[in-house]
Length: 276
Ligand SMILES: [Zn+2]
Image (cartoon, rainbow, N blue to C red; front, side, top):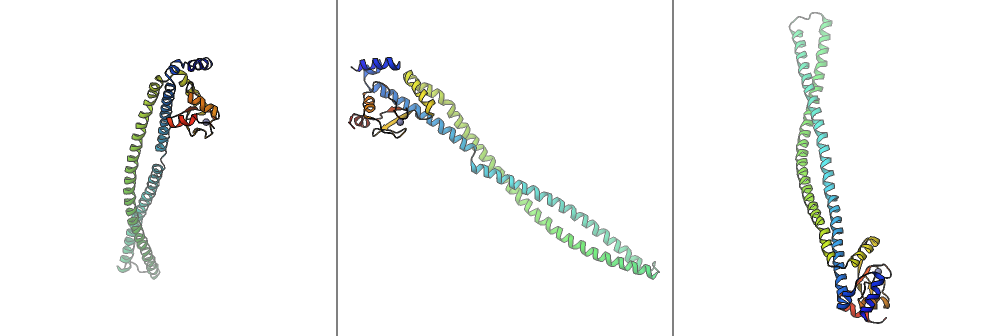
């Protein structure tokens, strides 16, 4: 009777179940179990690809990169300010030196008796006072500039240290990520061959069906049956389909989602036989 059913279905599905039917339902179930293993391999491929994406776009590494870039910018700004301030300081120091020399010259003229005119004397005294004021201003500016130079030298030092540390950490993280992604790539590269190897022990028609459902549904073409429910779509399976499933002489697909149904163990098999 089983052989007859097998042949009828064979003609409909163009699926050679003779061997399976002769040896009993376990053969089909074993084949579907293998298909389920293939599905797990496919899932592993998906999760590895996802993991690779996560490593590629790791937010912590992105944040570190931004922090490094911000610190480099701050360092560059401070270095520019420092260079500008040092230049300004040198200019003011030179100005101060020239002012002092000018003052010295005036003082010499005022006291060596070479200036005799009263008017000229007053003019030079006024100039001397102006130079005194300028000297004071310059000394104050120089003091402020020296303080700025000191401040900026300190912050440039600290920022340089931070850039070095962040750069080192970022480089290490990049290397680690690169290494992990390479390992994933290697694992992914081995997958197609592994899948082909698994396919070899599964009847071609079943493989084709798996591929077809996979294309249509994109994911998990095989669904476990638990408590008479398809775990793929969570829809209850009818008594008729459960009976067909238990018979095990042809692959059965879920009426609701089209996934290939798989009775994993004896317990579920028992339930399949129950009415209602
Ligand atoms: Zn379903």
